[in-house]
Image 1 (tube, rainbow, N blue to C red):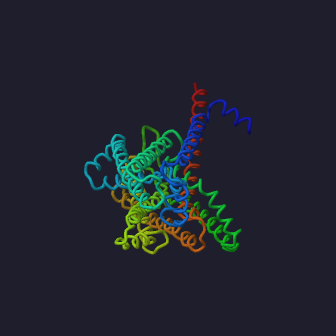
Image 2 (tube, one colour):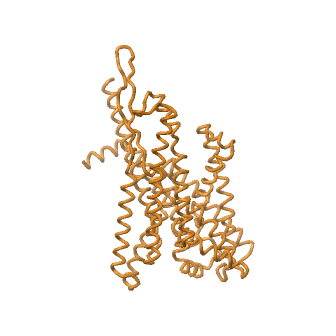
Image 3 (cartoon, rainbow, N blue to C red):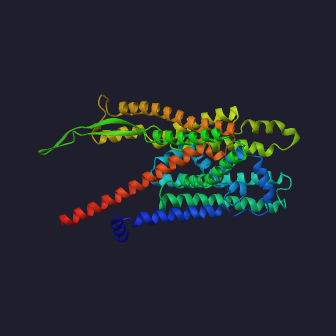
Length: 436
């Protein structure tokens, strides 16, 4: 077996796959190096004390998505969240602005134009957030070594450059590596903090801050949520599709049956990421400007929007459900699917081709999306309550587990698909050679 694998590697059969994997690993190495390059002008001891007082809050969630870059205030402190926010806005605008809707229908050229607008939006949001961070840091006594215009300019340039580089790196991973580049970067950031989170859990048990039964409950919860995510993500609703018979000359074609697979969760990890970005951005801005004595009501509002609070939980759940339906409508067009089935001579038994088929698929898809939205909401919220109760590291939350498991499954599925396509092409070449 090892000899065959070596021969295949030498023959270059999986050479392209190996190059893609190497590119992905090198890109992740670059990402982790950038997450340790600090922005100048910050007192690291004061910054450490600031984050120690924000455990389990908004800053902890942002820090988790950035792979710890925010707590070290590095050039990647903003992470990829401005790009995600810009993508949400761009997708929403395609339904509101007729010119963007027309661009969306133009195929690849229109998609490139919308991507260009998304990049411009990312730049604007990154500048706004970087300037807000610079002003907020200056408002904290002793945190900035030399406050002033020089610090603000350095901070804005460093953070914006880091975000734009991450956006470019994610696009390169999608094109030259494996998997969705943005999801891979978020996955890498969360996974980078898991060893410290596990060590922190054992430290809580060692110091007596958490009992052994509580630690076992947390571990069992993590295993149970992981099993649930894998079970649901592999689930499909298969719609029976029959192909009409066609006679060409003396031969009869068609008459076969197939299935149209619909996943329970077609939106993947996008809803919780989008929901976190949409809710935490205004909450963080409110927290930044709630420093004066006359703005105590803003401080109270920021505390109400922090993780674990009832208003945050309700808004987070509503945003997850909304983005489940919104993103599913983006990635799956039932009318287009019905038209394709009609053109290929396929039909669903008992359903007329065309408009009725589209409505039938929409009805099934709506039920599946509702079930998927309830599943994602439960996975993201239920563990958060236990995280707050047992005071375990924030990385054990449902959102982080969902992202890690789903991205891992998608990545492995793409690797398997790529290997199978390479083997299929090899078999075709051998068959052509023998036929020749």
